Image 1: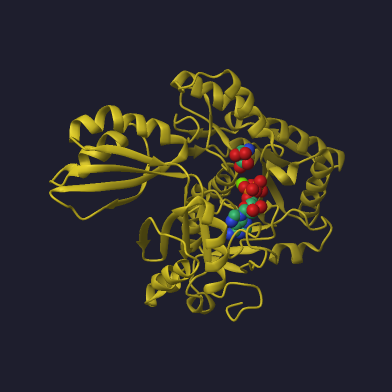
Image 2 (image 1 turned 180 degrees about the vertical axis):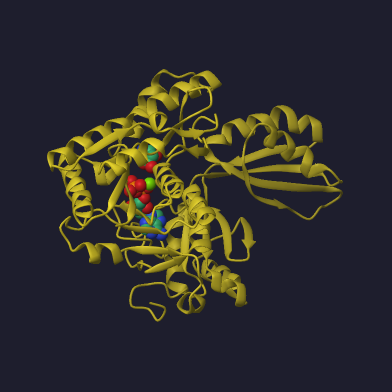
Length: 424
Ligand code: ADP
Ligand code: ASP
Ligand code: MG
């Protein structure tokens, strides 16, 4: 008997028919003798619908008070899902009980909209499991020290599931979704993308943080920190396929670098349309200037990603960086009102229509010329690179948003990632 955590995403819970199918799948695992904890997301489109309603009424600038209410509203989607799934399981004759995050409790900090899980109390869950019940826990939400409902950021049910698996020392955490694993890139953009049987934890972490939304970044961080065996697989296979077959399907996130992984120089391509570029022009090139520009941005709790400073001419330079698109207007406002007068810079220019495309692979550590192959491929497509950022196992470029799909497809081909290619 093993303790298994299943997570089901929004599209897997799109209708009562889908709830029944999920219940049948869970029941199959229970009947095979396993203990099950299930973490569902809200029904597909529900979180967007709830946030859309809130947006119609909320003030233009979010205050801490309005952020609290947004979390309380968004968290209700998952509460409906856990109740419906418990009913569907009970209808199958499987004892099941549902809990909201605060009932477990899943404790978080108070950062509304992007709260971090601090601890999970396993008492209630263990007692239910011992009584032979399937325990169903809301994804995406928790409770802060003051008893306020918090949410973990979009895609946060992945993190809830992995955190629950870590807290209860589960044998495996299975992330059921609408694709049958992690692919070399998003299969919706490149139909030739290839499913990876395994991907190293480090590569998965880079892919997720660079924009592959198949797993929320924090869920991968949790899996790494607590060594949670993690697998991504499809919830759209027939529920009655053999359990052994299902248990081996999809993509396993591994903690050891095997030989096959060593061979692939680039394992995947990630992209992110959520960023915006800002350039402060004509800044005096003197010590402390980066701090004068970026200090106020960081103080306003705005995350900065790629940064670039140009060579100076006549003692002046241009300084560019990217922020999340949601923070674009706020950052432009801050720079114009505070940073321009403080630095004596000439002007601030912004471009919210950019994207970041990244190649990821642990093989990049031991191979030279990978980045230049990326740049050559983009040059051959006539795509101008605006910014570059590298780390040991990834190279990212910032380009015009309109070339994103072209860039991803060309790079996917250039690095032999397609189905049936030599690397597969
Ligand atoms: P869920 O609702 O199950 O959480 P998500 O929409 O959050 O599902 O994540 C699954 C989606 O992630 C897929 O439908 C796919 O379009 C996208 N995706 C992006 N990059 C990848 C990738 N490298 N491999 C697989 N899917 C990816
Ligand atoms: N329902 C939440 C969202 O749409 C959490 C999740 O799906 O993981 O972001
Ligand atoms: Mg998701």
